[in-house]
Structures are given as structure tokens and as C-alpha cells.
Image (tube, rainbow over the protein chains, first blue to last red):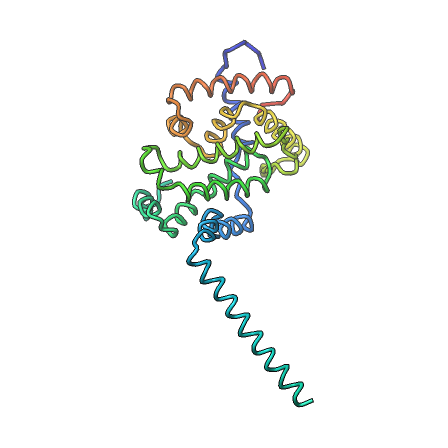
Length: 88
Length: 190
């Protein structure tokens, strides 16, 4: 191929374009990648998670719910323990 | 390329109002293109996957800002992808070479295996040369050859005039010719 500084012949352009077209071909992402991406994009964004954590009303309800649930579980456990010891 | 059932303007309006299903349609439509762009700019599947997800997450978070800018949605997406890829390159201390096994090479039918091997080696070398070009030249080649875009479409994405893209393309070919000559790649497609 002749190097004539800043001039490209038609032949050189065709050869270069053919090589580029052969090399830069569209790839199809693997199906598992497509599925992972699809799942990932539907997850809540980190920004939304941060916003939720800043929502005090919701946090209060969640915290209250967890504490109430634990209290119920402890009460049931204590009652069972008491009954088992009484029968023993 | 345009679908008859796909009215992008309506979909964009819905998506900018927070409709995730509408955004999902845009996502399905542009996933392949953005993935290809990122894949060729990074050279590996893992980073291409990660960056593609981040492109769409960023687009989803900022889609309200898109409508005022007057550029095609695809151009806007490519610009996001371009910025993320640029950050990715900046974050890495050195540029990663494309592993030869990670380069998709499509053998031609009926060719002798040895000929295919030579061709695939030449393609790998050409890819390495392309990845050493300045980013805007890489963008130009990817958009032109992978996405089959016209100079006008490329100009809209790169924020340049059609003439400027044409000129940049010519300079890119010149540069490639010189570098290919140094690497002794055979460009004859016989």
C-alpha cells in the first residue's frame, strides 16, 4: 500500500472500509447477559433506596412493626416455656 | 429501523412522567445498540454488561431532563454511554487490551481454516489499532460500522456537523492506513 501522505486512493478507502466492516460487526449480547440486565434495570435504584431510608414515617412504622412482632414472639415463647415447665 | 407500532414521542412522554413500562420499551429497543457500543469501547463482556446497565439506570433517573434538549433520544443515550465509558477509562490506570479470545470473529463460509485463522489474527490486530485511536475516532468507527449510521446521525450524537464528521472520518482512515502499514496487515479481501 503506498503512503502518499494525506491522500487516500479509492482503492485504499475500499480496502480499509472492507476491513473495518469485517472487524466491527454487530455482536449479539448473550441471552443470560440480556436477562441479567433486564432484571437489574427493574431493581429499585440506589437513589430510591436512600429516599426510602430518609422517609421517617415509613421507618417508624417498619421499626414499630418489627418490635411488636418480636414482643408477640417473646410472649408466646415465654408462655410455652411456662406450660412445659408446669407439666414437667 | 423504525417500528410501525412504536411511537417514540409518546413513549418518551410517558417515560418522562415516571412510567417504568414505557421506559422498559425504550430499554428493549436500545439495549443491543448501547451494549454493542460499550462492548467495542471496553473490549470485554463483563464491563460492557455493567456499563450498559448503568447507562440505562442513569437515563431512567434523568429522563425528565431529556425532553428539553432537542436531540434524538438515541443521541442522548449514546452521550450517556460515552461519558460513562470515558469515566471507566479514566478510572483505570492503564488501558486494557482486548483479549484475543474475547473478540468476536465471524469466519467466512467456505474459507480454508488457515485462511480464517490469518483473518481472525488480522481482525484482532485491527481491533487493537482501533482501540488505540482517540476516543472520538473510536466512536465514529463504531457508530459507522457497527451501527451503520450516516454521517448526519453520527454528527447528532457527537455534537458535530456532517462535514466535520466526514473530515474526521477521512483523518481516521489516514491514521489507520499508516498504522496498518506499520503492522503489516494485509487489506486485500480476496
